[in-house]
Image 1: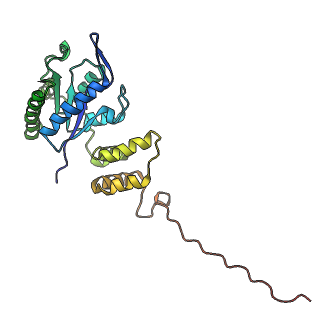
Image 2: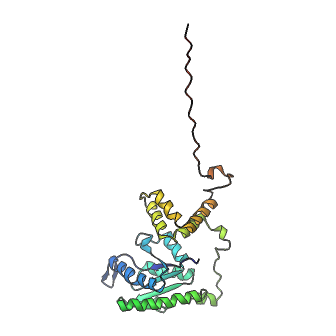
Image 3: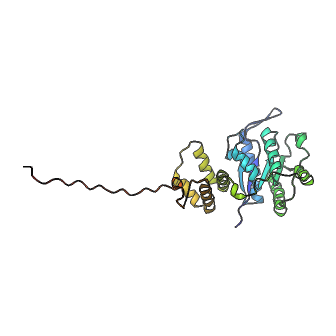
Length: 265
């Protein structure tokens, strides 16, 4: 059974000041939930969609965000409001792989000259605009499915034309670091990822809750097990005694010493 496609949303998250016009983080979140995410789910109900604030603090670019930019099947970048992080993440994605969609509000500020020539979808933040955006996104996603190697940006077109030699870090899948395997596995389950983020931030997490969540996702549990075996944290051979999961041996009760019943003379 094919895994659902992953989709990462690149857009401003915190409060924005565009030419003296204030745009609140709450308004941006509403735009994401009610328009962008909804349009994507209508285009492909099986998409696993994540925004940066689901995995990081606003204003920061973390390793998890970079991992999603590199490995997500689809990246949708909303360039309506000029934002350095958005432009940087969009550039990284274009340099990494194919599968990027640029969108912008038709009534928003003028697109900066440097990216005005890039292909993009314009939308209106209205009920009819939601339907129109969903239809256009469906067409683009279908195109990606039918043409997985087709360049989707001027950068990739030029790279293909000039035979640019991309660095290849995937010559041998066995060389993937255990930590990377674990991150990729977590990306497939928002529930497990949320538990790990909470644990990483110092919040107490019930181990039973984590084990239960992993048990409901056998494929993810398998990825974690492979990562643990590769890193040496788990062994089934006994060749590394310090790597085997500890097993508590039963303790034997000591028999009480027999009392000397002989009478002293």
